[in-house]
Length: 356
Image (cartoon, rainbow, N blue to C red; front, side, top):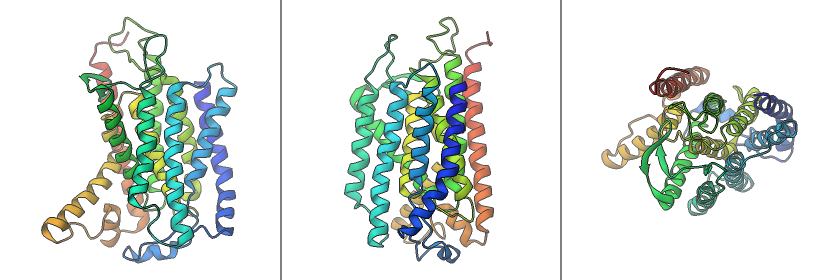
């Protein structure tokens, strides 16, 4: 538990103190955000706000994780390192996308084919590696079984697992990216989901089947404590960044942060065997993604827009809601989704019998 708390605090401090340094650097080099001309007019004042701030979140998470391991007896694990690899790899793809947008002053960064190829390379390599590194109990970081709150009886085999991992990672990273349209919205939501994974992973550690063989509700997860440490470090990093990213934002995370955080959340879900539970925990990300899908499908089939603008947070802005009102109310939705997901997780645990 000490390592988990230390990772969170260290990442918080690094992010809180490092973000203003990044703001000054990005401003000096003119790395400012481009704003959609067809969006709410109130956003035009944000043009030029430093972006690519997600790099601070990634660096703070890495420093918090490794620094915590320097003072704890347990070393880094395969599960923890793989999730961090996924976060960093997708963050790098997002950084290239952001850099091209800024340097060429256009809304299109990486071409869609190149961006998908980069995401696929990182996601597929993660999926392949996640099925390796079995420990003394023959547990690998990921499982070939589909999972909701724990592994189900449905095994999809290694090839379909890698494909499933890619779909999960792409969907989650794009969901965070779509949510990142208002000051602090994606960052604050990510804090809540990451906090849930700190609780889930630590609970799995306390009820691990490798520690308690008689309890029917125990969990077969390879490195739950280290996954809790990763989630805590990322949560602390997001908290520190949110101080500067909250309205009025002085910096945006950009695709660097959105793709990295999305990959991290998907990786945590895969490693903790809570793949489908992420749909509930990240309910706001799901709503934002569905709004875009509905908007595109409605326009193609009926030649009309279902929403004034997608993602859906812009629809409410155009309906007259103040930006801060949209952010706070969407945070409430995100919090309710996280609470419901944690409730489902705990209820499933109790369904296996009384506590021992």
